[in-house]
Length: 230
Image 1 (cartoon, rainbow, N blue to C red):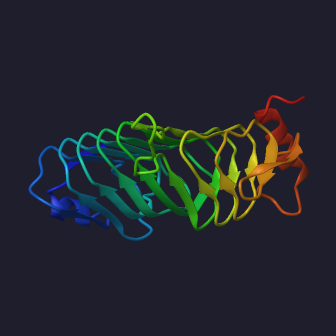
Image 2: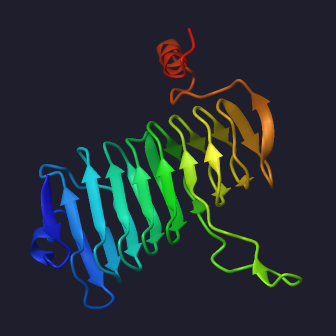
């Protein structure tokens, strides 16, 4: 691994990384695998201090990551296609992407003091949106108190998110589950279930998925073992 300051444009250019600084910033660091291959442009827009981006694996992702404020953490393990179309992180937030099957198009907003975590072997289709906050406050007029608050989003291992899905704050999606295209996910999903609709609801239980189509028997067996099934 190498450690590169976000102001070191010459070193970052070797990895097809461009950093735009919204203002004068300090102590923003990028940790990279020295021999990683590039697929295209990776852009960072930095407006705060003491942010850290750590990328591991054999490839670099492409896309744009906005570090709007300070003290956020990005951790990406990339050995396959990862397209981060737009990723916005606000103060003290965290984004973690474990080694995935592929990410075709993720738009994500991770607000102050929250986390967006995506587990191993997940498949994220294109036009997928995730938000850890409503961004604006809803006030109970009788009490004058706020009633909506941010919440982490967590995808366990082997989750498949279909095209055009939106996942909102406070959601956990269980291991091996599937979310159908264009669904709106507002509540947590247990493991090995298929959900769809607006808002999303359970369509079928005791199911999971494999990448091969038609399904290859060895893939099915490997999937079953990963879920702890004999």
